[in-house]
Length: 372
Image (cartoon, rainbow, N blue to C red; front, side, top):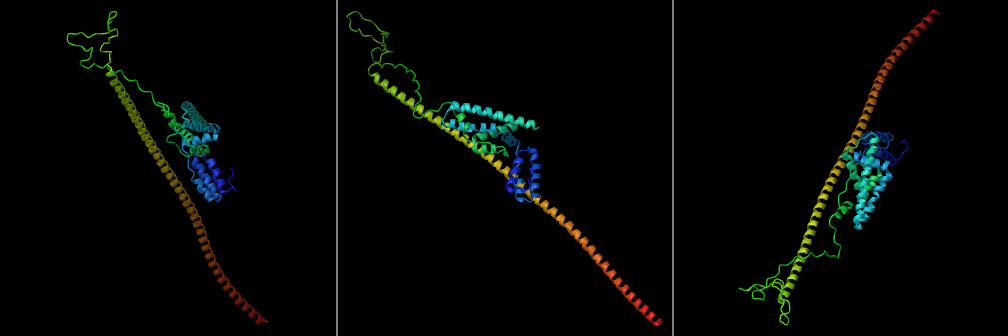
C-alpha cells in the first residue's frame, strides 16, 4: 500500500499491521524499509515510532499467526475463560474438570494448527517453541489483559501467568473434598475396652480352694436363687456403672479434642504450604517480570542507539554533501579569479593596443596633411 499522503498515526498503524504479519527473520529488513519510507515522506515522528517496534520471538509470532489466520477458533478458545471462572466460583468440580479437559484439548489443537500453518510457509517450529505457545494461550485464558494482547495479533514476547486461578481451582478439587460450613465429620468408632477386673473381695473372685464359677447355674424348683448368676468376666456391679460412663465420656472428650487438634494441625500445614507455594510463584513471576523489564530496556536502548546511528549517518551524509558543494564552490571561485586575471590582462593589452592604434592614426593623419 502506498504511504504517500498518510498522516503520522495512519502510517504507524499501517506499518505495525504489515510488520507483525511477516516472519521474525524478515521483521528488521521490512522495518528498515518502512522507516526509510517515513523519512522520505519527511515524517520523522512516524520514522522514530516505527523504528521502536519490537521484533516478536517465535512463540509470539505463532500467536500472532493464529490471531490473523484462525481468529474465530482463537476466540472460541478464549471464551472458555469465563466459563472456567464461573465454575471455579461455584466450586463445581465436575464442570471445572470437564472445562479444563476441553481447554487442554483446544490449546493443544491450536498449537498444532499454528505449527501446521508455519510449516506450510516453510518455517520449522521446535517442540520448545510450541510449549511456549501453549503457555501463551494458557496465560490468555487466565488473564483478560493477556487475552486482548493475543487477540490484537501484535504480541512481541512470550507471556505467562502466575497465581491462583482456573488452574489452581482445578487442582484444589482433585483431593479430599473440603468440609461444608456447619457440618461435622463422622466420629471415629470407639475401640473396644478391656473388661474391667472385679475389685478384691467382690463376689465371684477366685478364692483359695474355690474354683471360679463360669457361665450360669440353674437351681432346682422352689430353690432360692432362680436368677442367673453371671461370671466375673460379664458381671458389673452397680458401683462400676457410673465409673464406666465417666470413662466413656472422658474417652469421647479426648477423642473429640484429638480430632480437633489433628484438623487444626492439618489446616495449619495446608495453609503453610499454600503460603510457600504462593511465595514461590510470586518469586518466579517477579523474576520473569524483571527479565522482561531488562529485555524491554535492552530493546529500548537498542532502538535509541539505532535512532542515534541513523541521525549520525544522516548528518554525515549532509556534511559530505555540503563539503562537496563547498569544494565545487571553491573551484568555481578559483576559476573565476583566474578568469578575472585573464580578463584584466586582456584589458591591459587591449588598452595598450588602442593607444598604439591611436598614435598610428595620428601619424597617418599628419602625413596626409603634409602631402596636400
